[in-house]
Length: 82
Image 1 (tube, rainbow, N blue to C red):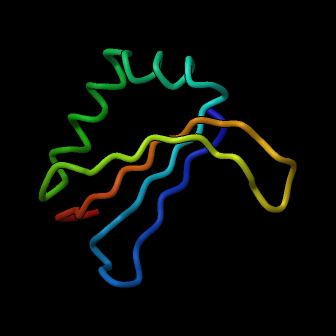
Image 2 (cartoon, rainbow, N blue to C red):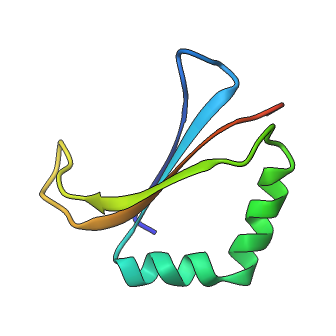
Image 3 (cartoon, one colour):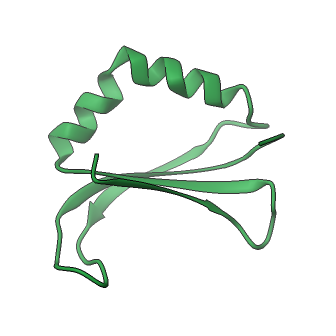
């Protein structure tokens, strides 16, 4: 994993956005297929009011820093509690 960020939205203090970047699409796919990762997701899912939405893609620019090519997964969900 290259990085992960969790944002709390201004519009709703109970809504969070998680952004995770991996070194490659293959690293992302390996993480997604890992049973331990799925078990961790299920523990977090218990805290959410609804299923998260997912957006997969490729990071093509970051500032400050160099141009990078990372694959990411962004999840957005509303949590009942923190």
